[in-house]
Length: 314
Image 1 (cartoon, rainbow, N blue to C red):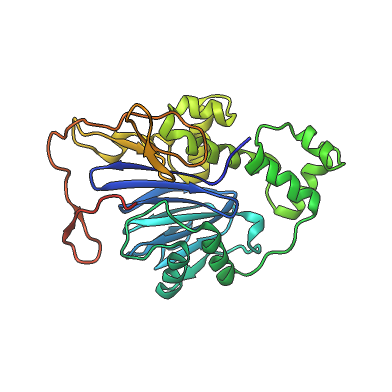
Image 2 (cartoon, rainbow, N blue to C red; image 1 turned 90 degrees about the vertical axis):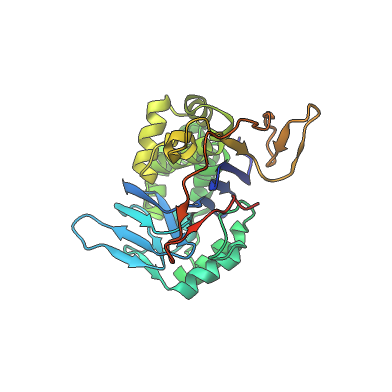
């Protein structure tokens, strides 16, 4: 069973990576520019740069740049943000189907960021309103058609409630055979049930990364092994789990320290350990006290070329 919403932030010097997931949407955000390799998501993705622009690369087509992008499910692409950014992921059936990306103007990006509770001058933060962000995206992309209730129940189980429940068991709950359920999901959603299940497991594994190794996160989420998790991450989001949590993915200076935080319901445990809880029961961690060998390299501001040092917002 999966509890939502879930949120965490990984912080290093002036760089921060943020994850938050709820019933309406999932976000991943970074306080630096980033580019991901070609991938094919089974969900909608909105790329919302915080002051820069988004770039979309499709095989055999010219690069497209805009203040923001909404990328439809199953579109093979690579993308980049030239500034800190928020990526907002929406399940495929929660927006109307369309084959081409939606280019967002700067005003539309500001509206979505405002709905989420941030602005284009903020660092990424976990304190976002996912429901409001989804509602604003729906005004830009349109309202979806209602799903067959049997399909709605099946995809909820596979992506959110329990991605490890056998498909035959799910089919029995809705009064269908497993083959008929698979066909009905493909017809209504446009994506196979197996692919939707892998997305649910990936989201679960990413939620577990601050508290465990990649191998343990893979096992918790129901992947066969760590290699299966890594392949799924590359296929779906264009990067590896290591790039989400490992210090070396951020080009850290030797001896610098990484602090993991679950940032909803902050407090301290009985032993004085720094705690951030997100609704799950999670093990506390000692607050890091390791020192830095040297200052972090300054980050260039995308608009002015000057350097800026901003801590991860809370």
